[in-house]
Structures are given as C-alpha cells and as structure tokens.
Amino acid sequence: MIDAQSIVVASTATNWFGHEGSILRFVFWHSIALACLVGLLVMLQAYVFTGMIVR
Image 1 (cartoon, rainbow, N blue to C red):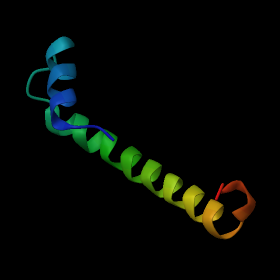
Image 2: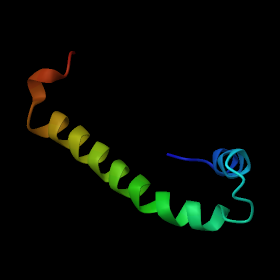
Image 3: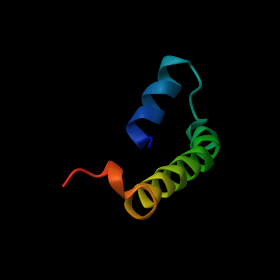
C-alpha cells in the first residue's frame, strides 16, 4: 500500500505540487485490487492448497 508521506515526497520530487489528491485517486484502486488479490491467494492457500502450509 502507499502512504500519504510517500505521495507528498513523490509530488515534491517531481515538481508536481498540489496534485497529491490526483495521485492518491490514481493509486487507490490499484491498492484495493492488490489487497483483494493477496486475500484471494491467502484463502486459496488456507482452504484449497492446504499442503502448502507447514505445521
């Protein structure tokens, strides 16, 4: 995921002052998609591919 400090540092480094909101809107849906993908992979490991979990 991305945090607000990284967005501010990136906008400052690229001279894109005042556009932090548009950067956040752009990466928000990517972050949600990545979180869903990781959740799906964890559920598959827990319930379908149970041999992958070392006990």
